[in-house]
Amino acid sequence: MINDFIEQFTYLGIFAVLFLGGLGAPIPEELPILAAGALAHEGYMRWWVALPVCLAGVLSGDSVLYWVGYHWGERILEWSIVRRVLTPTREHVLIDAYRRHAAKTVFTARHVMGLRAAAFLTAGIARVPFWKFILVDAGAALLGVPTGFALAYFFTDQVHEILRDVRRVERWLTLLALVALAAWIAVLAWRKSRAVEQGVDDGVL
Image (cartoon, rainbow, N blue to C red; front, top):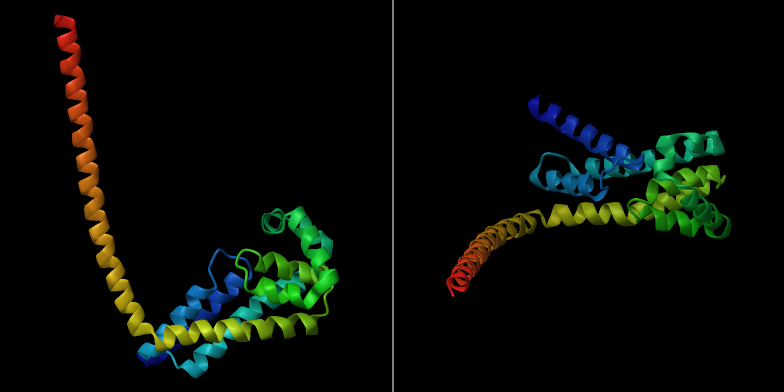
């Protein structure tokens, strides 16, 4: 029962984080996908369930943004929270891009963190057909999401080794930085003492 509860909560957690990230929350999409792959590798999640959950979370957030832009249109641009993501300059650039190359713009935006939310909101405002939007978005997600998931799933052990090496290097770098700082302070103290001695000598002379 405990394992089932942890498993269900984990799936819901992964979905929720990806959904919020899709809505524009400052959450790198790659992190929960990598986490899902690593958890599946460790046996906390079933990969054939976790991977579709990742895709569903990603596409759900994107779709909500699209429909918000589609139904509210230009009126939503009056919201200050929206303007933080979709500035007037970015809005004009994106609308122009959708008019010329809608599919390419959706595909590109899916892989650009920081642009994704603004681009998908604008897709709805620009009245890009939903079938085209979701088809291109899903195709782009099917390239990126399984790749990140698979990397974490198959190379989790190597990642642990790399992280251990990184921590070891960080400790050595910290030690070297402290030694360098101590040497710098010693040099400054020596120069100051020399300056004082020189001043005294000049005063005596």
